[in-house]
Amino acid sequence: MTTVLVTGGAGYIGSQTCKALAAAGYSVVTYDSLVYGHEHAVKWGSFVRGDILDRDRLIETMKEHRPSAVLHFAAFAYVGESVSEPEKYYRNNVLGSFTLLSAMRECGIDKIVFSSTCATYGIPDRIPITEDARQHPENPYGSTKFLVERMLADYRSAYGLKSIALRYFNAAGADPDGEIGEDHEPETHLIPLVLQAAGGTRPSITVFGNDYDTPDGTCIRDYVHVADIAEAHILALAKLEQGEHRPAYNLGTERGTSVAEIIAAARKVTGKPISVVMGERRSGDPACLLADSSLARKELGWRPRYRDIEGIIETAWKWTERS
Ligand code: UDP
Image (cartoon, rainbow, N blue to C red; front, side, top):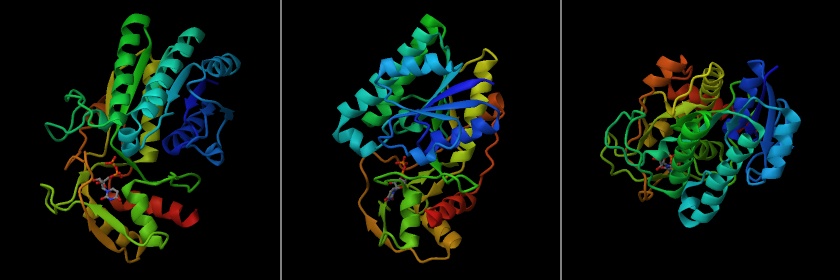
């Protein structure tokens, strides 16, 4: 059985990927500090509590479990906090990734799938966004992910490290079987907040701006189901195992949904009223982010199963009701 080390495996996307890895026949080792992850989300394989900044602990874990590849999710991911506390983000996301790569070199592990983001593009010149679009991050969070992508490219040239960065658009939804789901504290993402408003644990949802240059004035995003993102990691890993690599693939459904459409879909799925407050624009929010994922479809054979927003929200609603 091939063993894979999953940093951040107790988090939202990491834990969903551990489930997919186990289903695909891999032996999984989750490495997570539990700063933001949850031990109850570690349901597949074994668990090591550790920080990616702790080189000795990483090496000890790699020597004990002998993984053939690493899936690297561990990162801080609050855009707003990254603006007010950049040092925290550069330390954890950049220095942490550097420490991980250094430990991998020491242990002779030469394959990594990296959790990247459409935030590395910043405000796009063209929609839909292709992988060769200019990367010009608008906030420290996006910059940290961009820097790690650069690091991977340099390690590839110099040391032969095989890597694939997966640039997620807006990860959404929950495990279709209801075993795991989105559980951030604090929660800042649109869909879980809208569902909290539907469930009555939040009085309303504030829409961040309705004067954008979009059909209904609210921002458009490309929401992609977490189980489809997890599946893309299995395909990327298989590609690395075949000795191939690629700087990056975009992961999105190539369908845009506005904030107003999310709220309308959530009302339909939940059958509940959702009260809306119109607020100011949030700084740094592009009007529209939409993926061109044709490369992932063509080269990885990736076929996202969740193509419509109601189906995605339905899985998230089931999870919200459960938790
Ligand atoms: N948004 C909103 N109200 C909220 C949270 C988010 O109107 O309370 C909007 C936000 O401006 C963006 C979209 O919802 O246009 C998705 O935001 P989210 O934070 O979920 O993801 P992001 O696109 O920032 O990664």
